Length: 499
Ligand SMILES: C[S@@+](CC[C@H](N)C(=O)[O-])C[C@H]1O[C@@H](n2cnc3c(N)ncnc32)[C@H](O)[C@@H]1O
Image 1 (cartoon, helix red, strand yellow):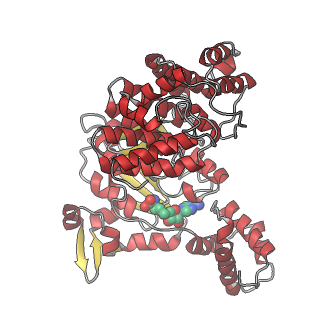
Image 2 (image 1 turned 180 degrees about the vertical axis):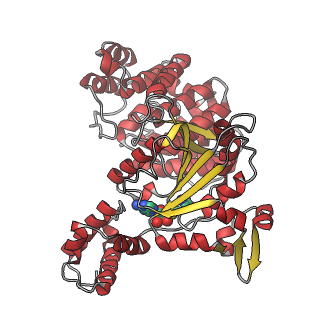
């Protein structure tokens, strides 16, 4: 910090930014915020109570100036191209009807920066045979300079780095070092300056849009503001309409109003029809493991990872001293927590009885259903475990644990593609979840894909170090952190990777 603004002032500035722009800045960024504050203070005629004035009311001009300094406008044409494949091959046919059909399509790019995202959509949807209507595309952003750049329609090679050559030929012409976008595409997107945090009945008209792209925006917002923006998007989407987020963003923990789709190698969401918005703790080692076979050898000789879990469950008793469970999963009922303790001591029958005696509401909770599915997996009742997972996903579609257990069930049923799909979904929903990476690594090894195996096992190894104890207990298949890490090391060595 440069010492001119006090830390108290910078903290106030951070709160104002969070409140009015929704942007979240970690402590590590306080120095950067102090510099921005200094620059803004120098520009004020009456700097004396700049922060007080912002707190009372943030004028639009000043909001724009702050947006220029603080938002992250990185974007390019055809970014995450799989999402555009999904848009054209799954979403548009679904919304426009099978015969190419009868209705207009309304698409919003929320947080469009300099326009590459809505222009990509315009290029792709150009000439769609919509008999009864047309495609309307709208781009909004709080950053005026970005919108001006979008309107100029002149782009660098860097912005076109992922643009397919035929699209470049068709829609751009070179002018010096820049590429100039064709007028037809320029005119097919309407841009306007909006703060997504602001209520605007016109922008957020109820059930108006068929598709909303809000990619790489929510990740910069405070959880409260991200939830508020999402609530608006949900309301403004037609029932059955689609939402695309950035590839590192999920709705897990934010909303239950959407179905999750996984096609074309990407994830996206569809607003539900109808009501609308609405292992053991670490410390143990392989040496302490009374099972005769080391885990790596058990994996080698077993058919599937579920077989290993089941064999271990039959042979292993009381491996570790009691260890307190940390609270990554909060258990809604003390009897569910007690059932988890019974899982720890491999008393699966008693654990199941405890779950069956839960009051109806607790029995229907995500946690009880997930624990039931895990217990069934340990008991080798894979079809029942799968049914429990599907029941859980019917009420909590974004439950990463249910997708992981389903991956095990699918593998056991000989459906490797389905297993991979569910592991990938679990990872998308919860990037810190170690077990689906480990499982994908084992599947890749079995499929003679050493590169894929190395990638996944390395990732599993990293994540296992900080994986939560209660999640290890639930998903570790009866093995603790050290045993699973040793398995990763052995498997990595076996496929020529570093361990
Ligand atoms: C990283 S860019 C994403 C651009 C594009 N969606 C993409 O994924 O390539 C994020 C954009 O969100 C905009 N943004 C951030 N907060 C906003 C807000 N409160 N209202 C409107 N736009 C906002 C920024 O100005 C920036 O242009």
